[in-house]
Image 1 (cartoon, rainbow, N blue to C red):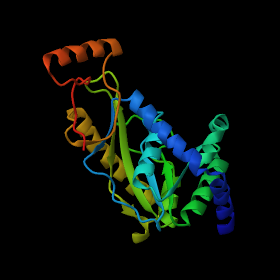
Image 2: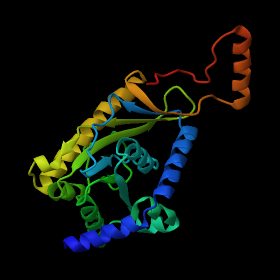
Image 3: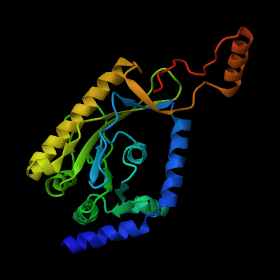
Length: 268
């Protein structure tokens, strides 16, 4: 079984292209900066993970942009790790290039798909310096929906792979600007090699950890106060290019500082 897992993992690694991955990450940053007012992290960035350990970043699944957020978080906070993640096999056929950035296909809602996910993930996580990026809810779910419920795969990996697991809560919300915000919150980082729990116990534990991170983020979101957040990507501001140009000229004549934003936020 171990050799079978490693063979499946090797197939994913062999398709990976560092050059394509770098290009894709630059593209993601530019796209998010254009489509969102800002990308902000609540309170603190995650604790670093040593290059000789493997890690799982897992998040809730509120919308289409979730995987892109996970990819950028891994690029920024796990720079020495090779990131990979699952995708519906039928959808992956439409975006075949994504195999070059560590994405592997699994059949959705099937026993064979679940087995494929575990096989590749176990093979990858058995070697140092790998990062699995997943949304274990398995389907789009409102960020305020409780209780948080996962598919069983993450818990099985936590029980037998001895990895670091890092919950990440995220929301996409409108505050004061025409474009929405990406707001994220890193939960408690856990070393699964330090605890011996059955898969069911890990499932309940990790659901609770992500739920707690989501609750903390939701309170900050509803407060509508940017002060606790650190800006990760400063997005596109303003209402309309022509109108913003007029506002800029008025500020210039008056000797005032111009900002296209309705409300300025902290940048650290």
